[in-house]
Image (tube, rainbow, N blue to C red; front, side, top):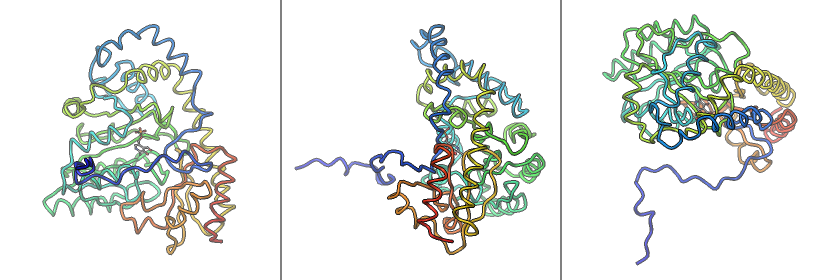
Length: 395
Ligand SMILES: Cc1ncc(COP(=O)(O)O)c(C=O)c1O
């Protein structure tokens, strides 16, 4: 009898991943940086210095320190949030994770059970939508406007869930450089959202992974800082977008007892210590200059993409300029389904995110598209957007 391990697989697995095809010439997907903007010299100097000084600490799990992560890195994150986002965080309120994706998984593991209600922005991070679908929770999309989550609709959804006897477990929001719309929620809207949440047994999961790349407005304080309950908000951040995604360094910020509970679920014996040490050493003296420089490069690229989209698509598309970050969110006529162009685009070396995958209601998102400008060069943006418009042939 032949043996087939497929027969032993769990019944609820997602489809297997295809073989990795490589990055195409016009890659407008994913949260990638471009090679030119990785601070290689600074990182390698920092790596040499920190290994010479503290490399032997690698002999023990967690470098012999707290399972919350490398202390210098946690203390840098506290300083960074204070200076850049007027947010006061204590050292015990920071947990280093392997990318913020691990943070998303840990918070979901902490809070969610099948059948739970959750509220997310109607257009949101595809990686969160797929996670929530797998967890079997009921996902409600809250309407957005140019300031982010609309408090009136949030109030309606909170009531609706409470009336079912199942208050939403959390509102997941990306307030500062929303993915995919690129908006930044102003201070007053943050206060309005917190006001609406008052009296509801619903947490806020604040994902701020693009917040260091903001150019369109001054950075408002985080919801975590503004929350008066002290335990409603769990916050996550990342060095993926501000330094490099392959580092896999992210963090959760939450009230200390919440983190202690989360630690019971983080059974990986600590996130990689090498990258934590290097990021801490590098960031202590270079983060602000680097983030400022990268933000200015991205602002230019956004302008290049905006010009290229206007030139190539003309009146066939509408979009708002992003306030920061690495992507633009395009809307086409109601009858267009952007996913239908993905295969032909791929044959021509172009990848984009069809709007359905970034929308709670895939039908609502079908005529939309997310284009990332973090990875391609300015030339590739011009050429790739032009080629995509020819394929879509809408004008
Ligand atoms: C909103 C949002 N959250 C989290 C992530 C995950 O980032 P990482 O795990 O690299 O920190 C991404 C990546 O694109 C994202 O866009």
